[in-house]
Image (cartoon, rainbow, N blue to C red):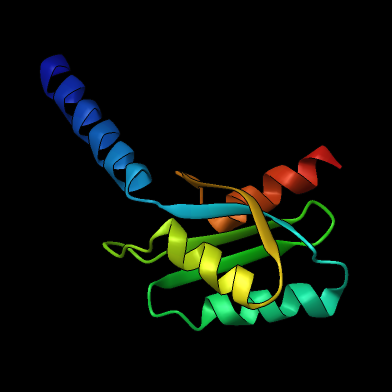
Length: 111
């Protein structure tokens, strides 16, 4: 019985880890966003992409986070180009394993 419980716990842990590992969010630090209209424009552009599941834009911290749908990909260059074409500069870009909402919560917790 104990062995079966340990196996069940291991499978649950692996399933949870696999679900978490599947989360992909592209996080970009952006210069030039100075007003809510700027942030809203970038958010709208990112949400229009078919690969996008969720978007979070933080004007104060200059962060744009684009969470991808499961199994979808989006290159950093595409995100950079969209932001650049909107009139802003990307100073840093990376893929993280957090959801857009997790990033939002972490940023708000720092305030």
